[in-house]
Length: 275
Image (cartoon, rainbow, N blue to C red; front, top):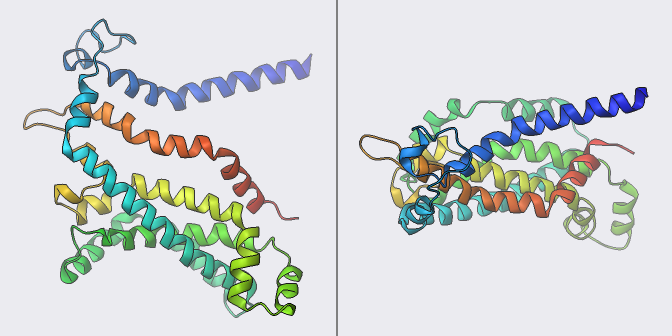
């Protein structure tokens, strides 16, 4: 009887939690189908509208800003992910395998850097990019990578630490170089961690707003979050189009998470549990 009551409480709490988490997404979805006069009018709190329309989606898809911003976000996010994986893999491998003084202090500094708010680096990065004439370009990948590399290194260190040294020693006995051992032996064994790091990095770069809004001010170089914030006229914000654009640009990240959710979970768990 007690077990049944505990299960009921667990499912009830889980249901309430899911409702709280999913409600904003649900509300954005139904808002995207409403005409503008119902978003704030008498029908604002109605789930189903009598005048549901795809007009908001049509306006977003036919406009050039959102489509070009999706392309920019894909390029920036993919490039950032590739760069972060390469750098964080080599750094994490060196930290996990080589013994040197102040190793723990270095890991602590990496963790502290990952906690810095982006607002602190916006000013210096803007001055640097302006002096180098890198604004309104894909060089935005560099500060994106700076933000995500500390987190990536921490995840990868945990996964490299689980791989037995005996495997690497066997490869070296067979004549493999250090780089060949890393690429052909260690890297495949750490694939869950690499995959998890790649997904988290891609989503973080896809959702980043502050740096792009500061460094890429031209419409042609805006990414998705910035482009959505400009869906407005002189006197009002086009909330219907904002909701429709939000639904559209959320689909890629949702698909990635849904398709690879098992790999993401296994990567996080395997890095957190030490055998």
